[in-house]
Each structure stands twice: as structure tokens, then as C-alpha cells.
Image (cartoon, rainbow over all chains, first blue to last red; front, side):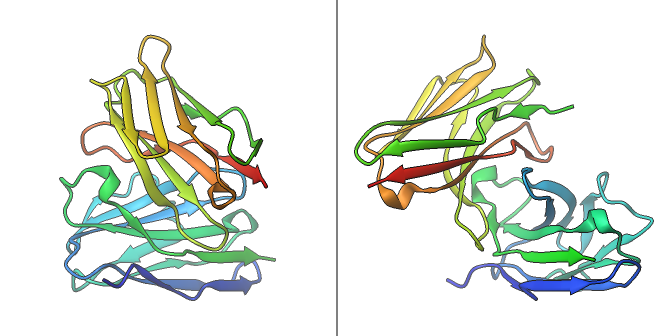
Length: 116
Length: 111
């Protein structure tokens, strides 16, 4: 079974530029999560989708971050404009359904973003 | 406000000995707890979990202990192996609320 795919794996941009990350969850997984992991911290949930609807985006900085999952499968996370403090690893995870036990969240390898 | 705390950033253990990783939490509403393991350049992978109604869960070399009165849980790995060297995250949640992760503890198992 293929895991959660993310691209790119690494991205370096200058502040005020825009960047987008892509995630393809495990086939059949209805729930998709985007996490931000700053160096030395644990992952922090940015947004959670159930199919193509947003379940929780309370911790998403909506002035610069946006995310979509138009067809309920893959998803993109965008930052515009980027700030220095956005440097982090962005992790995508998926699970079968929102009611799935948390141990059924499967994480992708992440995208490491460096903002200069 | 850190609801899940891992106060030891790193831990070194000799191969074959026991590794004990600790985690404290402040929110008494958490009803499940998990440990994730993370290798460099990979995403976290689930290791073991425990419900708040239990005080121990064991899976092979890994055992998680929960002390609700102290709001403390620990992960025991015995015997420790070099392949266990990784960053371990403690996480907690309740219902459908988002998981809250600790900052992680880097375990080094020395051969």
C-alpha cells in the first residue's frame, strides 16, 4: 500500500515570496491533515479536511496561509507571502475517516521549507 | 501554554538496557495518549497508544505507563536497540479534537 506522498521535499525561498506544497493521501482516506513542525517543536495542526470540506482550521494563519482539497483527494497548502518564521517542516497526514482512532493517522515525509 | 511537555530533549542509553522516555500533560480532558517515532527526513510513525481508562499497554519491547493522578506517562523500551535511535513524540487528544504533540525527545542507543 502506497503511503502519503508529498512534494517537493525541500524548498528554499526568500521572504515575501509565495510557495505551494502538494499532498496525496493514502487511497481511500477521507481525512487529510496539514501540520507545521518548527525545529525543536512538535507538529502543530494547521488544517483538517474531511473529504473536500474543512473540519478545523482554527490554527491556520489565514492572512497568509490557504489550503484546498477540491476533489476530496489530494491537497495543496499555500503560503503567500512567506515570512522568516514560516521556516518549518510541513507534514501531511491522512486517516480513513474523522472517527478513526488517532493511531490510524499516517504521515508523509514532509516538506522542509526554508525562508531566507 | 504547553499542554504536553517532554522535558528531556535528549537521552542516551546503551544497547540492551532500558530506555525510559517521559511525558507530562496539563489537560485533564485528554482521553488518549500516543507515542510517535520519527527518523530524520521521514514523517512520524505511530508506535503505541493508551486510553485514559488504562494504566499500562504493552506491545513487544514497548510499554506505555499512564499515571492519571500525576498527569504523567512514560514509554519504556526494553531491550533498547540501535535501530530505536530516533526522536520520540508524545501526543494527546480527546474526542475529535486535534492531537497535541510534545516537543520530542531524541533517543540515542549506543552499541
